[in-house]
Amino acid sequence: MTEPTIRSIDGLIDAGLAQSRDQSALEQVAQRYTVAITPAMAALIDHSDPDDPIARQFVPHIDELTTTPLEREDPIGDLSHSPVEGIVHRYPDRVLLKAVHICPIYCRFCFRREMVGPQGLGTLSPEALDAALNYIAAHEEIWEVILTGGDPLVLSPRRLREMMQRLAQMPHVKIVRVHTRVPVAEPDRVVPELVAALLASGKTTYLALHANHPRELTSEAIAGLKLLVNAGVTLLSQTVLLKGINDSVETLAELMQAFVVNRVRPYYLHHPDLAPGTAHFRLSLAEGQALVAGLRGRISGLCQPTYILDIPGGHGKAPVGRPVVRPSADGRHVVTDFRGLDHEYPPNESD
Ligand code: SF4
Image (cartoon, rainbow, N blue to C red):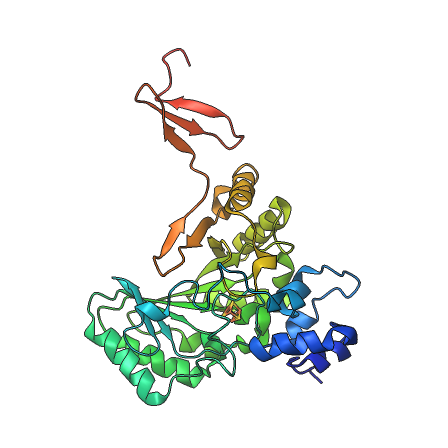
């Protein structure tokens, strides 16, 4: 029989993932930020490793009770760019459509942790979803619709298909991009019926897979990715750079290479957002830049993600990798190669 998703501190203690001496503090964490660990992810945890990178992503920690002055409830400014419920319209040509604020698993570093979960913003009512879709229909500048949340793939294939069919009637919408953790967190959900529901006539479907550690790409997860790619869905990756989880060149290189082998194009490596109670996951920008520079020197260009920062306050994303080109005093430029060595461009005639 399949184990159920762990949703309580008692459940974590029973599974050997938390100590009873921490129960009362962890109950306080769980009251504020939802806890859920799917069987697929629980099975990956190495109980002999106190710093296991899978456990650290999903098992609550008492450090989450500490909110630093810089942290904020809405770190990337979704609410200030929401013209109607369920829509975030930050850039002219694209919108987020957040039909659901439920996830199969709850990441302890989640940037929308104040909005997701059963006590969060919930699922859009049929009327609110209709109004959100009407907003997209009425704004012909919207070229891309990003289904996010929460995790849109917790919706049934029937509801996803209905949403895609509404979008299919909007000729200006060309791209539908689905942001999800389901293929790794709950791979059993990725079945042909769900994959078919993501396809609609006249739309190109992208799926951005959220995975942070190479162990998340299990054989079950890979089977789901294969179904998606073979059906015509283009796969991208999104990873959050997290202290103690993937903050080494070796781990990031292994993850990015595993993405590429499984036809997932590395897309974004996110600098962690200033979500409340997540300081223990954050590196400095300088540390992140050094890791990304290390990747450049080590693995194929196919495997290079863009290191990205969501500027707090809703000002959008900015690539924040170390610049490799700068002006030199004589009007030329200096370009840094993958070994960290500088070169003039254009070169001197003698070079
Ligand atoms: S799956 Fe995404 S939205 Fe859900 S808890 Fe994790 S980071 Fe947050």
